[in-house]
Image (cartoon, rainbow, N blue to C red; front, side):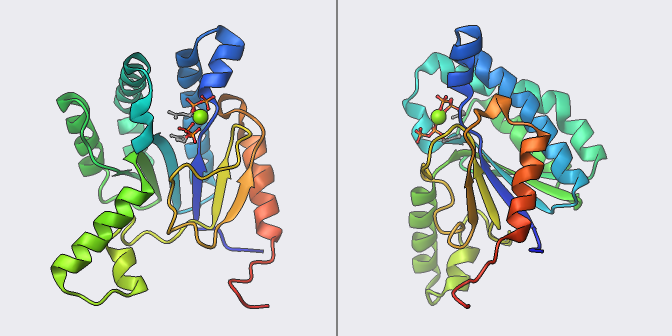
Length: 224
Ligand code: IPE
Ligand code: IPE
Ligand code: MG
């Protein structure tokens, strides 16, 4: 049975779900947030230590302003509703990505990080305005400025995921098989599961099924 420390998820398919079910993409984003809550709670119950959720990519700025604004207003509501709950459950929240949103949202994100900083039951990383290529270029710049040697360890320490172990498992919902600029360095040895279901349809049973499959995989890391 493989140990499981860190699950990463590309939560894809909200827009299509919304169009299929309510004739509106943003309805899909709203529905997707209930699944986020469920999956966080289940991860906590399973005593997995890290969960990284891809919520908004550096490329998602290409979307219509209306959809972007709606997404951020949903995120605000989500945090206002859940921050105290998460804190009580000893969950630590961390944002991966540059906080260049509205002042209100930036402050809320900072508050969420500060409030939960010392929590240690589960760390939830929210990849928000996150792009792996940008993160890698930044790490190179930082090492160059520090005059330190370029090693795998030094490099990892200059990524946004500093001190976070690499994901053991990546799940992407939404029936699309690509990484979309997510954790390109960190996923080097992750087991990858592409799930056909759209994110709002994904449920605890689907999650457990994948985790059980993961547990049984023979992970080689180059060995035999
Ligand atoms: C993923 O769902 C959520 C975000 C990118 C915020 P999408 O909005 O990409 O949904 P589809 O892929 O268009 O269905
Ligand atoms: C990846 O999904 C980003 C998030 C889930 C936040 P996208 O739907 O943006 O990915 P592409 O653009 O289809 O590759
Ligand atoms: Mg998508």
